[in-house]
Image 1: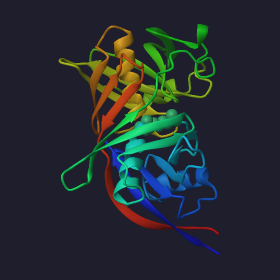
Image 2: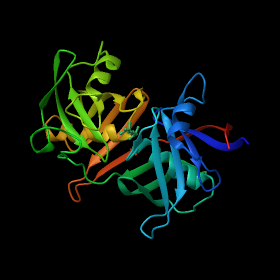
Image 3: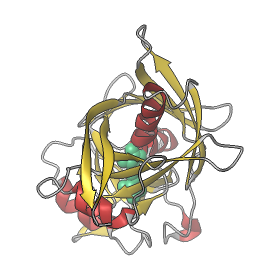
Image 4: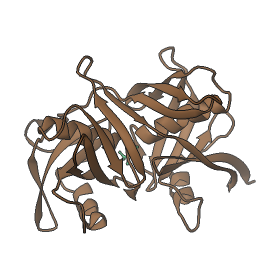
Length: 285
Ligand SMILES: N[C@H](CCC[C@H](N)C(=O)O)C(=O)O
């Protein structure tokens, strides 16, 4: 017996996901659903699937799970976190402009910035502190790499490892013109140095606090933006003396603000969140 699942398509700086409110809809096999529904030609079309749930723990208000287009589950998603905040507030599920969101990477606090008409203009996410050493994510001495080298496709890529709950490798270049992101991103994602694969950013520091960045996402490929990737890029730029602790990251789909705060060491991500459309999808019962 087939059943109907209602979904909401949303995007943050062009990083688009299918959102399902599990308070009202059950997705029995989210990994398989993420693969089927993310397909642009035979599905809905998205970078992945996000499940919104109710928290059962006192330290959080709601929960979020994110599945990439290949069905793999990520621990955290910056752009989706902002969309979840907008969804919960504008659907009237909460009337608070501060939301504690439980993710596989811990509780992230959202601060919603409202327009005069009470719609959500942008959201600031407390992404927590960056993790610069994690031997489970990077097979290098001490599990860390700053201006280190990763070989792929017969070339050496100099970059810096930063985890924001999910792993990122940030490669700085003098220009991104002519970058074959699909080729090098795919090879670097699956480097043997990354036992759980890795998200890959190529970045170019511009003038006055601007950094241009493009991203190859683990499990989704080239996306228009990546929130955790923007955070990793800003942290790597500061770590390597290329930029101050706050940067504006210009990605293919939009601009994200990142501030690696000096007082608490947390990274704050600010950016847009938009509804795209609502729909229903049939799933086998
Ligand atoms: N797009 C997301 C990150 C997804 C990360 C996922 N690709 C992985 O780590 O496997 C963001 O805005 O932070």
